[in-house]
Amino acid sequence: MAEKEFEGHNHMLKNLGIDIGAHDQLMQGLQPMFREVFLSQKNRPKAMSYFDFRMSEIHGCRIRELSEHKEKGGKVIGAFCLYVPEEIVLAAGGMMVGLCAGADIGGPEAEQYLPRNICPLIRSSLGMKLSRLCPYFELADLVVGETTCDGKKKAWEIFQDLIPLHVMHLPAMKGTKAQELWLEEMIKFKEKVEEITGNEIDAAGLKEAIARVNRRRAILKRLNETRKISPTPISGKDALLVTQLGFSDDIEQFLEGAETLRQELEQRVRNSQGAIDAAMPRLMVSGCPMVLPNWKIHHIVETNGGAVVCEEACTGQRYFRDPVEESDGKLDNQLRVLSDRYLKLDCACFTPNDDRINNIIDLAQQYRVDGVIYNILQFCTTYAVEFYRVEKALKGIGVPVLRVETDYSQEDIGPLTNRLEAFLEMIRKTH
Ligand code: SF4
Ligand code: SF4
Image 1 (cartoon, rainbow, N blue to C red):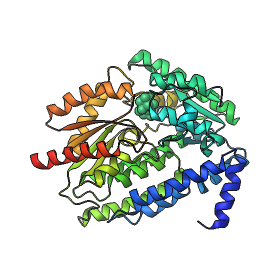
Image 2 (cartoon, rainbow, N blue to C red):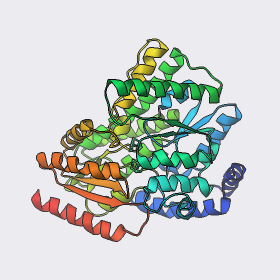
Image 3 (cartoon, protein in one colour):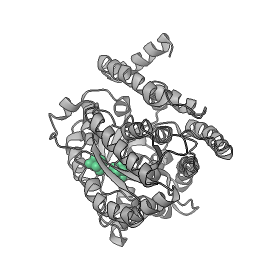
């Protein structure tokens, strides 16, 4: 990036209240990490250059685009979870961004409020805000929380003193009563968004917004289909990066970049051109979300002779698997369809959660995986306990699974690498 441009970005970030010194340090740490994890890969699709660029500008151009949207009177709404319907925000002329917290940042600040034994995603979310390092947080006119796990549920009580917050109350089980409750939450959210944006949502606007978000889901789904083929035409790291960026990037630009990548990947499949050798064990990573810039498990696997070909996670299949039905109906009906689709998501916070178990089996078979890495963020009880049923189901179809528990620090890289290497070795011997 040109020096002048960099200074311009810093000026913009300073105006948002970002701690520039600490932010520079963060970016200086991120750049070599990105080079090591991504740019050092061989056989990368050329079309990844769009995503490399957007990643390099994640606190630059993208922030400028959102700021310009705000200067024209638009609003920005931040969310942490897949249960928050972006379609409602778009239908009211707003923009939604994922408030990703995948880095080991702001721990000491967050620990003034939170216990030490809390999931790194929650700690980092609060840490980002308290240490004034996330421009997305500072741009958000409203942040939306949800009552998924206990940690988040209670953390919103702290967040509400720091930011304008709206909480969506998610039922813990599915069924007719839950659908009614969730529809009520959807309507309350719509009203809140209308209040913040000053724009009323109508059926035509919601229909268009549903179609836009579906287009992003569809391209991600199609890109990921190519990973079913051996050799996989794209590394797991690159595929994960594309999905992660989908949470913050401008939809239209993202669609263009992803379409170019789709064409290249499908051509690679026709030419049997792999990003990773076909002889490498094919793995699925299942479990907690891996939000930017968390690439830890994928990086270890792919630098130790494995290929990640599928993510059963919110930063993966759960995000793009199911479109929202597009109907011409009245607004009431559209909201119900939207609400039912979102309630179908199979996060581990539900009980019982048969859908997730069935989906994992289905994905393991479709992507012809040789093994599954079950990824738990430290202290995430819901995903940790659900491992019991996942392991049982995978054993039933003869797919080995390794449970790993990790956080965002670099401290466990050594032991984690040893365990993943041993798992890959075991797979190689038995296949
Ligand atoms: S894992 Fe559950 S709580 Fe976390 S982002 Fe996904 S749906 Fe939301
Ligand atoms: S990873 Fe687990 S503990 Fe952390 S926010 Fe998500 S569901 Fe909650």
